[in-house]
Structures are given as C-alpha cells and as structure tokens.
Length: 438
Image (cartoon, rainbow, N blue to C red; front, side, top):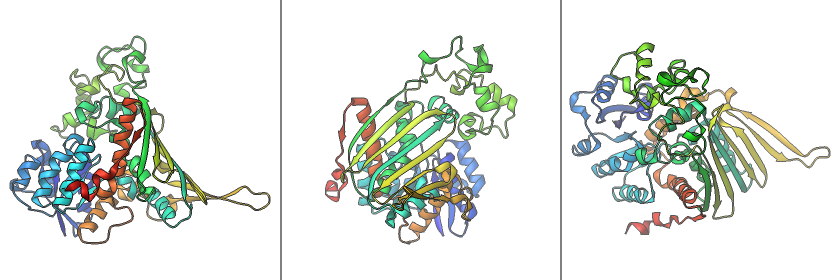
C-alpha cells in the first residue's frame, strides 16, 4: 500500500486522493497540510486523520522528515515549486498539479531538485489518461498514421467556465494566481502536442491573442457594476450571476461557493446574499472587473523535424469542447474529446473513391470515460498510474513524468512571451540536460 499526504486540500487534490476510497488496498491518505483550518478538518474527517497528521503548511510537514511515501500537491499555481522543493528534500515522491511552474527559471529549479534527490515527480496532465487521447496515441505509436505532418488542437472554453474561473474566479489575473490563462487552462493541450511528437523537441513558437471582449468597453449599455444590486438589464444578461450560479448552483460550486464552506449545506437564500456582497467578485459584472488574462490565444509551433502544430484557445463559447486533427503521411485522425469519438481516414485509390474512414466510438467500448472521473475519464486513471509507478512498475504509455512534461510547459512560456513581445521565440531546452545541473 502506498501512503500519501495531501498538500493543498483544494478541489483537484481531493479528486486524486479519492482514489484511496475506491482502492483502499492500493492508496491510503495519512495526512494533510493546508493553511486553512476548515479544509484540514474536512480532510481529517474524510480520511480519519488525527490532529498529529494535520499540518499548517508544506514547510511544517517537511520538518517532520519523511512520514509517508508520497505527496499529492494541489496547491495554487504560484505555490507549486516553493511547496514541492522542501518535500523533495525530505524524501517524498510527488504528484504535482499543473502547471508545475510559472516560468523557465522555476522549472529548472524543480527539475534540478528532483534529480538531485532522486525523487519521482509526476505532473497531473490528466488528458493523457483520457481514453480518447490514449487511443489516439496508441495508433500513432503503432504507425497507423505514418510520419506526423501537422497537428491542430483547439479548446473552446464555455461562457460559464470563463466567467467562473478566469473573470470572476481565482485565475482572473496573472499577477495574482501566477499563471497565464493559456498555462492554467491549456497546458494540457500543449502537453498533448509534445506527447504525440514522442520526444521531438519544439524549436520555434509564435502566438497571438489578448483580452478583447471581457472588458469595460464591451459592457452592455445601461449595465450596472453588481449583477444583483444595481443592474437594470440583469434579467436579460447572458452573464448574470443569478443565472450562472443560483439557477445552476452546482456549476463550478467548488470555486463559487468556497466562501461559504463554513456553512453546512447553505441555502439558496444564503447563496443569494453571498452574491450580493460587493467584496465578492462573483457579485460583479463580467465586463467591469480587474481581470487581465486573455480571452483568446492562438499558438503555432514548429518542431525540430519540421512538423508544425497549432493550438487555439477561445473563451466564451456556447459549448465546451476540445478538438483535434492529426495529419500523417499515411492517414489522419479527427475528433472531439467531449464526444469520445474520432474518425480515422486513409487515402483510398480505388476507382470511385477518394478516402476511406472509420469512426471509433469509445462510448460503446465497455469502460466508459465517466467511470474514472472528469477530464474525459483521465483524473483517476492518473492517480492509479501514480500509485503503479511508486509500486515500482514500468511507466505506462501515458506516464507524465516531470522530464516528459517540460517541453509542453516551455511551449506555453514561449507562447506568452511571443504574444507579449510580438516576436517568434526560438526555444532552447538544453538547459534541462544533465550538464545543466553541474
């Protein structure tokens, strides 16, 4: 049995830790570290922890020496490196939420520490574990598409997701959370590009984007500052906080109602009062906040072997969606993750034909995505693989070790630099070689 301690008892860490409930013979939660007393108490009650197993911080935990096998680190983006470094030194292997660093310098520090202390660090790139992307990767590895020529990915961030997390929510400002919207939302997708390329390094990156819609100049005429207090058009507004969070009280509840977690089962009336508090960003008009992260961004990558790839992040869409199109010398794959379906096409030279195609429907192949949680079924599969890795088993096809996750992050850091400085960025990943650690 692998023992693990939760560091940062937020939504993501608790999802990965829940694998212990499904497989108590494989994983046991033996501690929690979080500055929030209420969250420590919630985890303690959930997993039967004593006060001696609860800590105020990662640093306090590290001072105890190694008292478990591993850490599940679900702290906020800005804290990932600073909380992980002392825990690596203390002897822990770590499952670390993405993005694992805010910039190249911190990425180098984490990489160097993992190698210095010979610890396993696995990054929570859960989409590698979703059956949709796993099946695509397997077909690439088996040579079904031939040599990859081009990859196109896109994430459509829905109107309620962008409003809840990137305008009113805790990822609304890069200077507050530490990450850009691209890294906070799409480092999964950038990781997929490098995973499908099987170790070929990205060489050049260019990116365009910005905050162009969710800003004051686009506020509807006669709109107020606070949805439920002074807005005469609230009833007609697509971004009414009432419509987003009282009519849909379970939508993004773990973020929206975090300020009410001291109340057991708050009523709708209590939630409405909470949304009328002017100090609560969820009370505010989405066009009149201080958010500064982009609401759209396009990224183009050229890999060292000449393969080109694009990723488009578009916020405010009607439907949340991730799309992919991979074109190879022998065939292509085109699909939508949210449907758990993709189409495989090949050239067909028979008279009267142009191409042949086969639809792969993963919804009818036995093990459904939903059985393993969110992100297309990837969440708990990742937790399962982390346990397997610590048990000494060979890394899986999906295994997202720190070393294998670096290039995707470098694409994201470089894309933001390209967009901000309006230039092509040439990427040098040699700084992560063994020689760089001497």
